[in-house]
Every structure is written in C-alpha cells, then in structure tokens.
Length: 404
Image 1 (cartoon, helix red, strand yellow):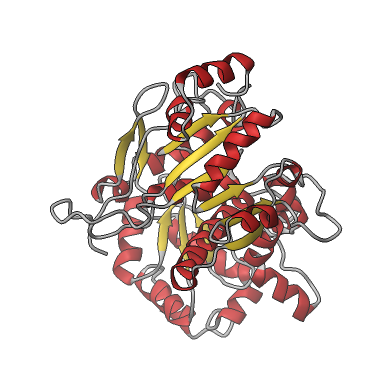
Image 2: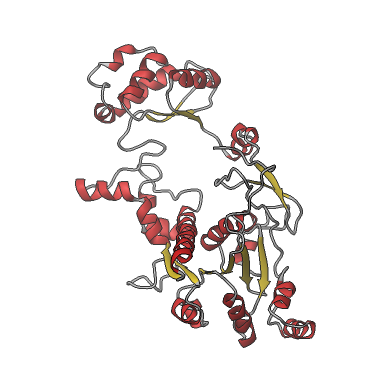
C-alpha cells in the first residue's frame, strides 16, 4: 500500500457527509470516529451533566481525561443537550434534519421514547440513514436486556474460547463493542453507497450479540458438527500445532504459528535442527501434531530455549516460519512498525496534545483526519447558531439548563 502523498491531496472520502450521534461508551463512538477519520462531520450529542460517561471511566490521560474517550472521540463536535426538555429535543430534531446519518446506542427503547425511532425519523426524511445499535436487537426475548462488553462476551460464548482450560477469560480489549462498531461503520458506508444510486436512505440495526456471534463462527461450526465446543487453548490454537508461546535462553517468550505441514518442515529443519521430525508419523501432519501436542511443544521448546530471543527471531524469519514477539503495551508503543511507517500523530484535547496513531484505512492521496478530542459542549453555541438561534435564545437555553 502506498503511503499518503500530501503533494497530491484529494478530498476526504466522506467530505460533505454529516453524522449526528446520540452515543455513549464504546460501540457507537468507535463507529462514528471512523466516519470522522474519513472526513465526515460528526456532531456528538451529550448530556449536559457530565456528557458521555466514558469521559470519566478513568482519568489516566494527563490526570483529567478518560482513556476510552480520548481514543474514540477525536475529530468530533460536542453539543450538550438535555433531551428531557422539549426544546432540547427540538434542537436535536433540527440537527437530524440536516444530517445524512443518525447513530444512536442509548439504553434499549430510549431513543424511540424520545421520538427518535428509525421509522419516525425516516418518515420525515426518506434519505436519512439511521443506525440503531443495541446489545441484543430490537426484537426477540433479550431486546430489553442491558448489555455491556463483558456481558456480551459471556453471553455469546467468546469467553468460552479464551483463557485457560480451567478459567474462562474475557478478551482484554472490548471486542464486543469493537465488533459492533465495525459493523455499524461498514453498514453506514454501505447505506451511503446505496443511497448514492437509489436516493433512498436506510434503517440499519447492529446488535453486539450478533457481531460477536459472527466472530464465533469457527467455534460455532465445531460445536454443531462435532457435538463439542472447542477447548480453551490459552495462547494456542485448538486445531493447529505448534501454535503457542515458546521460551528463549534470555527469558523472553516468542510466539510461533505453523499453519501447515510445509511450515512444520521449515521449522523442524531450519530452526529446530530436527529433520527427522518431518517424516516421523507422530509429527508429520497437523492432525498428528494436534493429537501429540505435548510432545510437539516439548520438542520445539527444547530447541528454542537454547537460543536468545533475537537469534530465534532471526532464524525463524530466515526459515520463513511465522513468528512474533510477545509484546505488552510498552512493546506496542515502541514498536518499529509504528515508528518506521510514520504512523504517530498528535491530536488536541482539553488536557493538551495527545499521541495517537493513524487509523488502519490508508488512502494514497489523503491522510485521515486527526482532529482534537472535544471538551463537553465545546461546539454547542456554534452549532445552535448554525440552526438559526440568536445569542439571546442560546443564553436563555443555557440559563435554563437545556444546553451547556
């Protein structure tokens, strides 16, 4: 993929698209931040009394800003509205009337009760794209059930395939939220493309449970067709071997993943110094290696433990055997792939400039937008003025607590 070429700038892919987001936490903010990355204008509507509660999950970013909020909300405009008040809802209706996309992930049924259900909004504007995000969807026995990342990871079975054989463990990143956010993002893009050809908007629904169930596809098929769910394999893989972490002489584990028998031959001959294992029936095929996993891991560990980390990585690369360093957060921040590909940028925030990495979608002719993380209500006055409200009206609404 070509790097961005600032000398030949192009328009951001979503320039001219306006998104209004009635959002909180992770799933919807992740979807809309990606729309903002690609040039859409995203107006984030927050409660006046504290805003999106992810602002205060923690205060680790320079002692004043939540890490989740800093990650998910750059390049957005914050408007603080009290939607319990008639005038607050009227302002939101005016905002949505000017929008291309409306995204919401409030508690089950809340948007509908406020008058912002998809059917009602699209009756007013058939070109509007409405993205409704929830835990379990708008129909079915769980439609009113509250859902958070850990809960959905458990309900959809993800924790059954992560962890140790004795202990289920949720994924360390909020994968249920991220999965739902990715599908909402791609759903919005698909709806925009269709609208460009038909003129019609869309009502799109994304449920966290559905997103994780999709990601559980291999485990689901294993369960259906063998009668048993796959076992938890810690860092390993239930149907591939060797595929795990292995020790080195200097104490830094290295991850090795052999996908096929050709890869096993390369590992055995080029790294382990054991060409005999290529034809030994207990090791020769992946099915045999999985059946004899303990022997396979012992043979690999016996060889890797005699080498230092750097030597092992070099030999694995030279042999063409897939491998990785077992990094933590420090290893990621210092990773040569990020620095060597110029992926670091700075974004503004209420607590000062923050480091951030460019999003994964890289266009050759334009760089992703990396705008500031907004303070709560930072854009309220400007947006209200765009809607035609004069200074006196804005001051009155603020005094009454309708806006902040």
